[in-house]
Amino acid sequence: MEFQINGEPHYGWMGILPGDGFAIRMDIVDWAYEALPQTPLRAWQIPEPSGALLVLGAFLLMALRHAR
Image 1 (tube, rainbow, N blue to C red):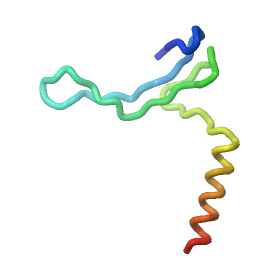
Image 2: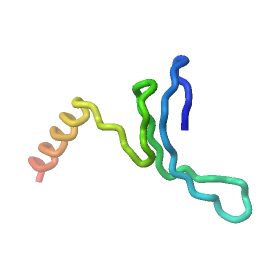
Image 3: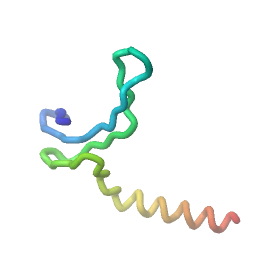
């Protein structure tokens, strides 16, 4: 999919499944988009997390191990 943020094209994907019964409905089961404008994103590709998120994740894992 393509959409605009601040007038610049961004790309992403959505995983959808048909809804129950005869309703015209779709359920979104997965999604992702690229935060950098004009940067392609392949279907089912997840953007790489930032360094801050990796540090936070490592801290949380250490805290959980220490709590045991």
